[in-house]
Image (cartoon, rainbow, N blue to C red; front, side, top):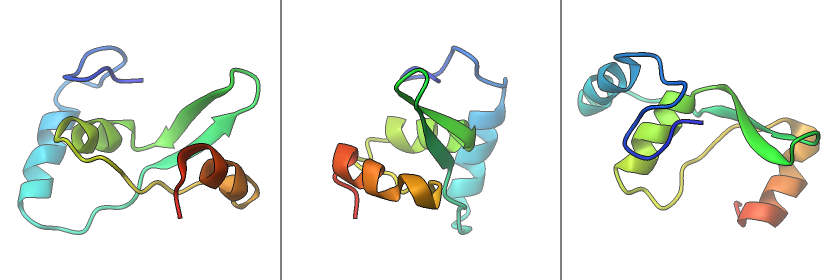
Length: 81
């Protein structure tokens, strides 16, 4: 988890590089997330920096890719289509 504004288990410079990439207008792959039934938390398999940057830019929703068997649970929990 990367807290608002950065820090935590952040890889130094990755968020800055993603912001630069995003500003060039290239398509962005959705972060891959999953619901961890052991901890009850959403975790990222890939894309935690992308998610954090988009969240910190004020986006109220960010698309993520999730395992097929968790789609219904994510939809129920987060109201995602």
